[in-house]
Length: 123
Ligand SMILES: [Zn+2]
Ligand SMILES: [Zn+2]
Image (cartoon, rainbow, N blue to C red; front, top):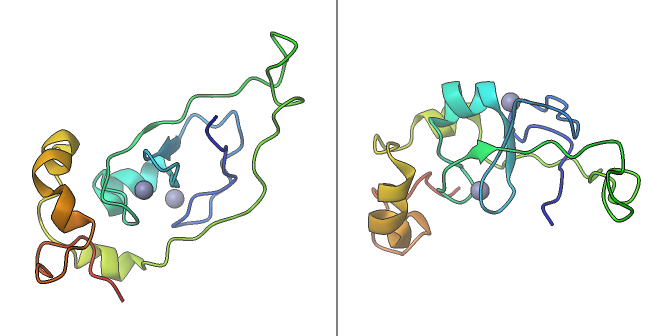
């Protein structure tokens, strides 16, 4: 079950379970829609993957085993180690996430010797 993380990793905006502007990557890195669009160009700075809208988890328990009362949201606020400036310096290939995943996964994940391909550069 995805962890509902409480904030945007970049601007620290609160993203409660009913937020419609929460975006997550496949590792559940969580950012707000504005940061994904304006700063990240739909590329997760932590893992290089794309983003999708995070589904709302209803407050009401529609079934006995579902809902926020049964599965509360996460409370640990996380912050990406990359600054806006570092993210802005990163490579230009931030287009189609499926193409990026298929053709650039090895480089994005940090294979040595391809520093110009890594996104973003490690500190
Ligand atoms: Zn944000
Ligand atoms: Zn990620």
